[in-house]
Image 1 (cartoon, rainbow, N blue to C red):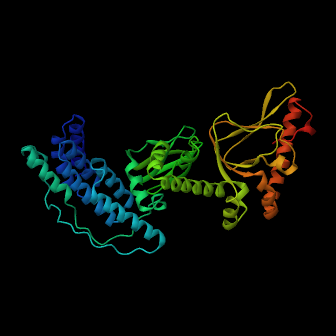
Image 2 (tube, one colour):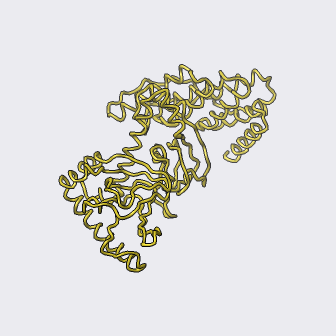
Image 3 (tube, rainbow, N blue to C red):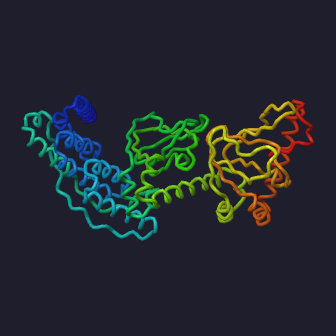
Length: 436
């Protein structure tokens, strides 16, 4: 059966690529009737019907499928189906109503107060498979109507299921959620496709709808991520290069939201931009809590309190963050990207004495010694960071002695490393060097 289905899919795709959706519908009808649980067959059928001049048939299929997926708890796939329908009819009342109901269910599930939804009424699915050869003999109008009937008729619904997580979208109010869905871009890729590549520019956030990704950094696998995972959120805040590579390990569906999309959303719904940026900021902070040695020594409550004192900031590639000889500007924690620490020798030449990356801190020595900086810190690429302003630094180290202890430890290590670099190159008097 699998071979027969593959042939039907291939024939349908060939017809679609040749610009003949009316012919593709014949193969899609047999595909859907043979494999009624394959939602991609129904989605492809809807697209073919719309292209063949029958948008109402396409919408009938997408409405029925969206309702079924929501009933089964597959909220993200249901959103994807609704998004296909809204591209045909942006103000379709039934699809918007289903989306609104899903959003309410998602919020209730998040709060732990989920009510049992009413049963879904469905007609019986066809008991026998139709054939493409039969459909090819039908007049066009009858072909379109019968294809609609087959693809809009789903197997019995069964009991309602607990909804799967709906990340990011539950951070929005219902109106903002509906507006956001209209701006989502949908993607569907095969195994081996790179969705993110370490070090490459990126300005989009991804939400995985279905399938699995392998995430790696420096060639080393880090994790397997599935439906509901959010990737690339740093790009929304800072536009920083991708910090890891994500490759589809099986067919993957995803939503994509770019910074440009966010800008367009902000004009229509200002609260959307605020909520999404705040969501991304919280994820950034959560990642730093796990990865930065500065925060790793605290319990979660202390981490959150401490992180609340920091401000989010970003720097473009080659931008100077700290200028040698100027007063301290704050304590920085790198969230993404890398910086070079440079000093000037007696001949006015710039020499790199350190390279710092995500999770590492800088700016601490001049704060601790209360004297001007004696090094430049320059962004190697787009850098996302947290900064604790100078005015808040002294209060924080008084409230959290562990911060002071950690900073004193890395200060000693850095001063020694800088002295070694100076002695090796005969740059300046080692006793006069205070990095940062």
